[in-house]
Length: 152
Image 1: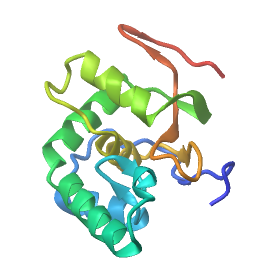
Image 2 (image 1 turned 180 degrees about the vertical axis):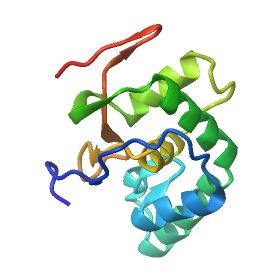
Image 3 (image 1 turned 45 degrees about the vertical axis):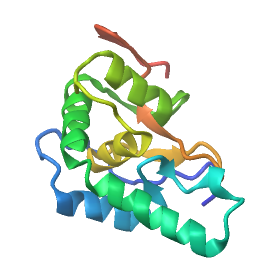
Image 4 (image 1 turned 120 degrees about the horizontal axis):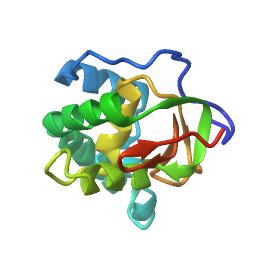
């Protein structure tokens, strides 16, 4: 998918639905390279295609085991994240996961792929940072603790 293409056409952010395993499986079916570290396996190019396929399957299984953390991130997104009309390229998924962790809202480590899956489930639009990056940009306003603001 070209760099400038949005990966979601949903206009409304889901504010009430908790995420269950089936929801996570749907997100992962939509994005077949999404796994615990994000999109793809960019740091594993030295491995054979068979090894990469096995590693991707293992990392996707690991993401499926993180449904509780996905729900905590969804709760944070529903409470704190504000949608904007355009993709925000000021902060990617890796930065957002740290914001969530640093606020101690989830009480645990948040993997990049967990943040991405939760944000997709909540209906945020997204775009890959680059074809070989595990990170994504979202249409989430730039955020500062105790205050959020849009850089439109």
